[in-house]
Length: 109
Image (cartoon, rainbow, N blue to C red; front, side, top):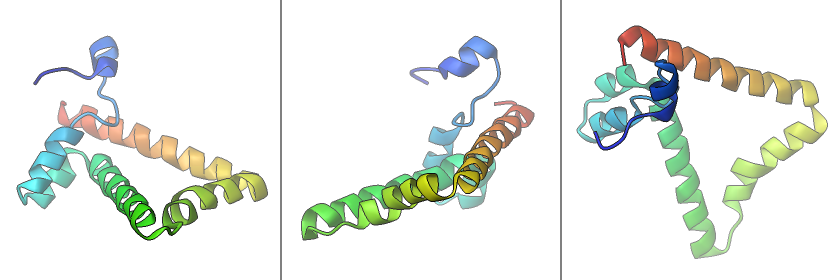
């Protein structure tokens, strides 16, 4: 490996992203179950990022506004109108990251 995770290097605890590169590589080689075992959150976030890139590409090609409509506006509206739901959403994101870090730690990454 060319570089190591700075968070793991400093704390000796794997971050939520540790193993994502391996998981994406396994996914590209068709080993879906092994990819999900390696880093489930990394695979899910990879698909969300690819979907965002695809939506932005569609926007640029066809002069539409799908990226903002599906990726930006819902979070702005949620933050402005429903602060409790926004806080619950952020808490869920933190819990997923902590859970994924624990998953990585238990696997010995």
